[in-house]
Image (cartoon, rainbow, N blue to C red; front, side, top):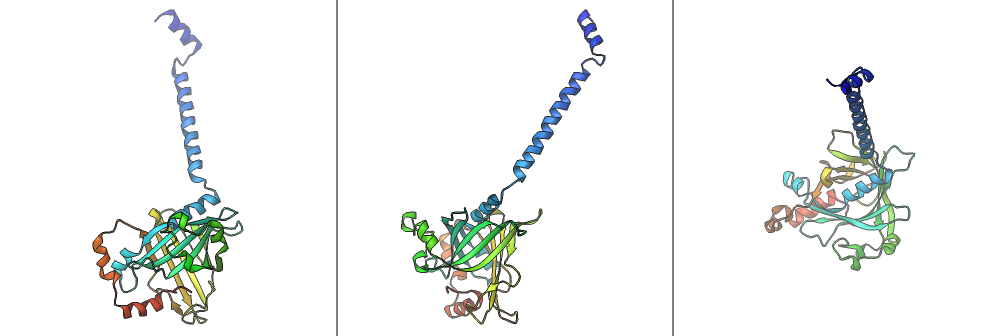
Length: 272
C-alpha cells in the first residue's frame, strides 16, 4: 500500500466504512421521507375532493340490466342518466337525473335535481346529496341527451330548483369494502305523501368502484309498513356497456303491459 493509503487509514480508523454507512443512512432517510410525503399526498383529500368524486361517480349512463336478468321478478331493466346541470355560488354541483325504462328512454318516469356538496362540519359524514323536484319538469326531458346549446342555461336551471325532497349523508367506506361511499337519509326519513298512503320515505345510496351506483328508495305509512318501493333490496346501476342490437328485443324490455302497470304501481313513485 502506498503512503496515501496509510494517511487515509490514519485519519479514518474505520477505513471507507464510515463514509459508506453515512451514505446509506442519507439514502434511507430520503426514501422514508419520500414515502411519508407520498402517503400524505395520496391520503389527504379535501372536503370538496370527496364531493367531486361522488358527483363524477353519479354522472353518466347506467343500467340495471344485469340485476334484472338475475332477478326479473323484483327488478326492471332501468336506464339512469345523470349529468352536470349547473354549479352553485358556493361550489356545490347541481346534477340532473332521470330514470326511464330501457326501451323508452325518451319517456322518463322520474326526474330530479341532485345537489352534491361536502357535509356540514358539525355532522359526521363526508358528502351530502340532496334531491329536489323540478319546477318546469317538461322542459328537462332528455336534458343530458341534448346538445348543450339546446338545454336550459345554468341560471335557468338554478331558478327551476323546486321542493326539497330528501338529503342523504354519505361517509367513506371502510377499507376492504366494495363501496367507496355509502349512506342514507336520517332516521325517520322525510315527509312523503305521494302515493299509496305513504307518510314518509327513506333513501339509501352507495357509490362503488367503477362508477357503479346502488339506490334504494322506499315509502312507509304511519305504522311503518312499506307501501311503495322495491322490497328485495337496492337497485344496482352499472355503467352502460356497448349494447348489441339484439338487446332491443330482450323479454326483459317487453313485459306484458298489464303486468308492467301493476308492478310499477308498487315499485316506483312516478313523476309527481
